[in-house]
Length: 246
Image (tube, rainbow, N blue to C red; front, side):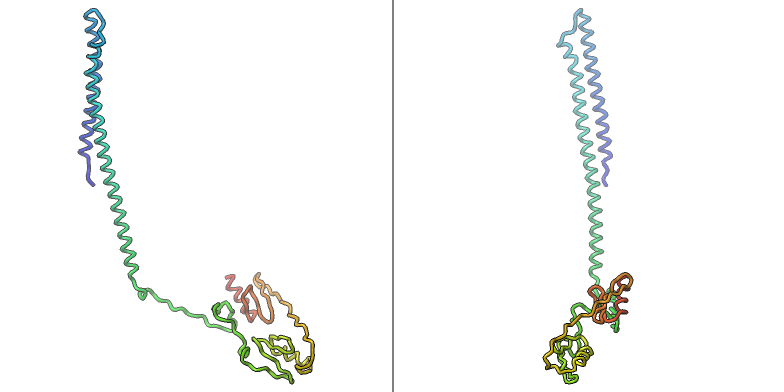
């Protein structure tokens, strides 16, 4: 960074001389007043106004010249200070620009790496077991229906035909979720399906609530519900609660 010590020394010297001229002008003005007073007294009368002003003006003029020199010196020193501050600001701006360029180079080098250079991790799918819950199945996949829900023919039992529709068993207008219950109903009636019978009201079994680790597990139709999750065994529901609270 360029130094302005010579200019500072120059303006400091001129400033000192300006103050000296100002002091000299004050001394001259004061001496002129004293001299004018003494001259007037020597002639037996007081000094006139013109004599006093004539003796006072040279000193005032000299002091004014010294004041102008002081103003010029201070303006010069202000210019030197401005130049030094400008150099410091320019240096800071250059350093900041260099840091930004280095950061851009580093980011460009990192972005040029190919994806193949990055370590690839193989995703291992966990094996599905009989206790797997619907949480381990992808949401987009439809729920699994009974294998004979759509294509199986009606089942004949004791002269009655039990229809299969959407995974349920129907007989005499009643819907059963299990084939054994439908067969038991046929055995209870002991008649064929064409008999004029009033369908018995289907009463849903009451829900059983099981509390496990402070979480309610609802048992309904041999299924276990934890919130909106459905499990087919109590052990699977408990494992889901353990994973959730872990």
